[in-house]
Length: 80
Image (cartoon, rainbow, N blue to C red; front, top):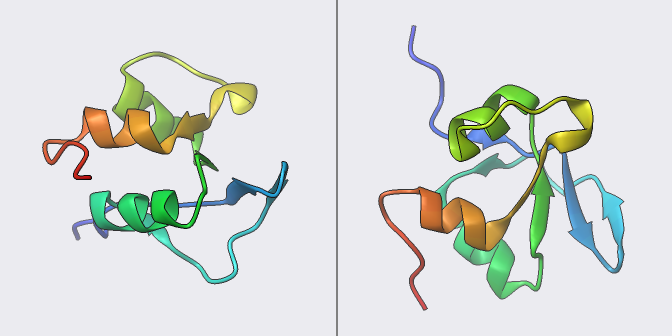
């Protein structure tokens, strides 16, 4: 069974604090662009997904990723 595209976002950085998203969402290039348009610059994901995006090992404390970094790491790249 293939896993759904994107990884679930556990928290977003909005209003100068970490908080759960208002609805369950997965991090894809399209949702990243939407979040960036809403002013959200950072998201918190599972450490394994963080590793797939960055290529670096990361523990619990290293699972935050910027939206712009995610978009630059995808094949789609940023679209402004």
